[in-house]
Length: 380
Image (tube, rainbow, N blue to C red):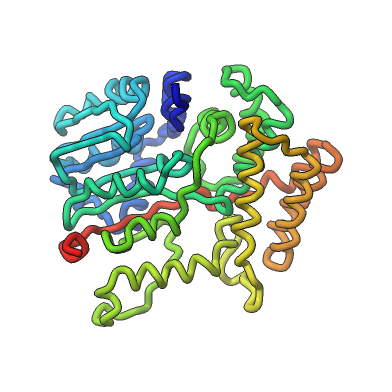
């Protein structure tokens, strides 16, 4: 049987490890509303809308959508275990018609087009994420909006490094409650440096460190290319792109021109996704950052192959690769350099205490991006 990214693992453990700490539920829903506003989707835009969500996870985020009273909400997931738990959680919302569909995303078919299509935390690390994203986009009606999430080697470098540390120190990464407890205890200090963290620590461990990441990245650049000629950029979180063009500027009428401007910005600012502490003000005028994505991709792919036992990635080699990345960012940020040097020292000496500076390093992880499908785009 083919190992399906996410689905096979979630079915084997019986749940989606995406549960949020909703001890103060209103705060969670407020954060989600802020997210949707940054994506160009105010609460009122969801009211009365027909919504389709792929990979809805554990359901806390679905509740925010349901609070806005869409006219219908269709939830699609390839894991029977996930859908079963989701139904138990959401069936209390009996004032909104809900449909639960057991289907792989790339096999899903529907007679409807939707006002809002959500695909969050799903596309990165699929085997064919670009093709899957194109399929997701095909369910948006003209005038509707799609929300996707992206990550690449730069934005998740810190997580990949933690995966390598976990594999090196704990070796057998087969899921068990004991392993989850041990990893949670080990990485709890790291999570203390992540402002606004809301996922349960044990679920972060399961989904980020134990869950096999067997597929390919789906980057912001990939999302832009998928939307080319089909949809116009609407919003993002973080809001990485500033557009100073007046609305009457003729170039605004060409959504592909906007995509080119965004892609140009991304090509020179990839380093910002490496560390949440970095800001554009720290960029050196003559610094070339074009090689950083390639360096990060090489390292993460070696960790991926090491995890699947397709390649032996020695800890000394890992330390050498991290040292090269550290030198590349040395003039950009003392904090980032210091964190990576702590990782290098750990690789050289094997002392856990040397990881102390690294524990504060977190990349910008997952980015949200939204696109609006317009009549003019459909007609091309």
